[in-house]
Length: 384
Ligand SMILES: Cc1ncc(COP(=O)(O)O)c(C=O)c1O
Image: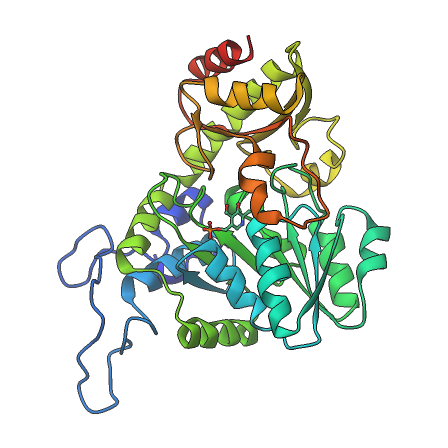
């Protein structure tokens, strides 16, 4: 089995365990070694054995990049030290005078990077509801070079139709980026729907254990990969070998974890939907969700993130979030343990100036893989 480049004739679960990860040639070790080295011996001046310096390349990182690219069904993949570092690298393709169109509910950190850092370099931006065609059209301009979508989005879990958006971007000479952090390639593969780049915070579901911060870019175009590879080395926001190892370890169980995340989330959605303290439940799997149809078209299941508003406003939301025991009050998401947060007072603060006003009675759950009855009881007690 050619584990270096396992294509999609192999099952997703097989690729998650084996792609990029053949046993070590020298020792037979089953897991990829942590190549904790900065430099590599050269056989002659300028004649290395594939690696010369670990910012430029490291075998543990190569294994991770091969593994994640195989899961996205991508020709190429590049790993970074954080999701933001991956995003920053894509945005460095832009020049002064270029324009980025992003979703109006982009992750706060993405909004901050584009609106507060990229603008210093002369890049212009606007934000629109990317699920509405007229909104996209109104905000595209002749300088738009990137259209940046997050689907499902954070924290409203709205869905952008990737095929429609990427067709639109291409017709207007722009590239389409999809942040696939919430769905993971197990639930959705944006490149199949025409996206040019998939970006991830691997800190979340791909790592899955709240113990590593990382980022990833997948793409099919060799030309774009060369540009991203140049920036990866030139800017240098690369992940450490140990972090690559932790990610490889996490990814092996991605499919089974995602199945349980989705199953638990569905039970919680059912519970919340009929609770008297709950006003509104946001979950792309609900037929009442405004963008459910797009979710159905491009997602295998609907994910482990659930948002809901409660009666009693901001104070009620804060009290509920502080009262749970199994759900930990914390930022971040996508790991085995369940987390609860109030976006308006926590994660969404980094989106200061964003056109999206997040309801201050909104609670976001990252549903973990604990026993579902314990999760339901915990929420029931907190909502009482
Ligand atoms: C959807 C999304 N994209 C990107 C990021 C940034 O990733 P990181 O925190 O790994 O830099 C986050 C972080 O929460 C996120 O939720």
